[in-house]
Length: 438
Image (cartoon, rainbow, N blue to C red; front, side):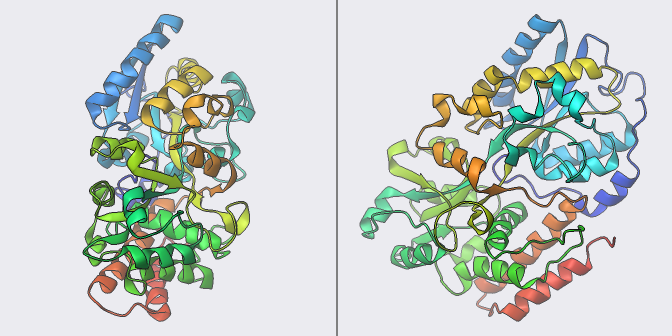
């Protein structure tokens, strides 16, 4: 999702809400469910620096769509903190928009409620075909074995950003490629009140993104093949401990980072307080904080050993935004035309270039805009070494519960309390016990 989105707001009630989700027609005059044939309502997620920036970016494109099709699109940009609850309310009331952006990690959860239009072969054909999209991005559009609940719109991947000046002062010539190299470099960089790596211990989503990738590198997952929570598997425990140990044992993350929330680690990086940060498409944020392009570099996120690639070479989750259609829209044909427009090669290049993200449409990735030093490593990760977060209906609860467990472990580390394999397993077991029972 964009940057690290707010952790699944209202996740504890998600399964109840989705269980009651309605798929029937909407009440006349409410939301976009009764849209006139020449009108669509669209809820866009906040991708830019502000809601107003998004409106300025999107409105000319919506005007272009209206000129081509005669269909007017009524735009509302919804803040991330409100978006999930707005969607959940819409699914239960049947009074939502015609088209909406969703965080790609929500796909399976929202799919389970049945309120979103399934993208079967016929619907994909209406927008140019499924094979236009990058396979990893399609992996975050719904549960395996089911027709996707959405189509990819903006894609992002994690990378390692590093401060060139701080690296030079520490005598480090190249960015680390493995975790051992990162820790070794980190100990050279963590001195004189400065730290090697930024983290956001109170950012539940970012916690999940990091430990999910590490679990993949340890050959583990948070769920079994049949979708049951498996938070205490040895590889999962090792992954969570490895991440928290960057503060607790390796001491290359500042203890104060245990309390950091969204984007605070980026601010420290831009102000030369930390030398590295693991993030997704951060260039625009650095620029907004006064950092020049020649002051930072970007490299693939570390792996356990060797080079990124398939299997244990996973070094990023598939981040991004999907575009969905409400099943009870009165203008399904118009909604599909809008999805086709937004995922066209032309619009994919324009919108992803503007937002600093990567097009999930293969042909659009060939544009020179996505071959820059800032974006090429992200494009490569998305194509070759990124994996989708678990596509299970309980994904939101997973993010909240495990993200909180990691937050509490960071708090222990910051307070000087020992973080052990046993204490990590106990936190994860507690989280697993709170998951909905299948």
